[in-house]
Image 1: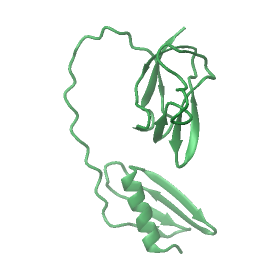
Image 2 (image 1 turned 180 degrees about the vertical axis):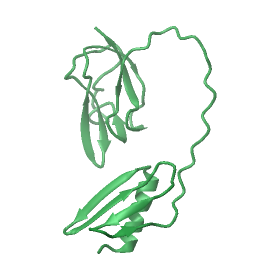
Image 3 (image 1 turned 45 degrees about the vertical axis):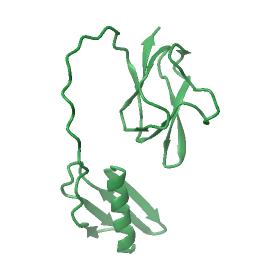
Length: 156
């Protein structure tokens, strides 16, 4: 059985990174942690038939969203390329390298337009559509969420 300190640190890691699910296996020991976004009913299973319920972990505070203004938009709404995972957005392969894609660049479905780093793995993100980059919606080095729009692309 895993050390309870290790399990507690995994729970804290989940809260710190706003993860809802985590599974780790060390040899024959396997830990699967799941928690609801609202902070209720966090539970964990350790191996077959053993359940650990950690001390109540408060849900991260969500700041109140500012009231949306109904301002008319002059630019068209184009399809977006969304982040397939939680991670860090990088516009280029290195700080010295040129950006994969900039506003006005023509891209195809297989064109790499950025990378999202998740757990020390650089994941290339492709445009998936042919068109012109209309807008870059995030900044280099910014943390991104699953499904967060990264680029808007004007289809050809």
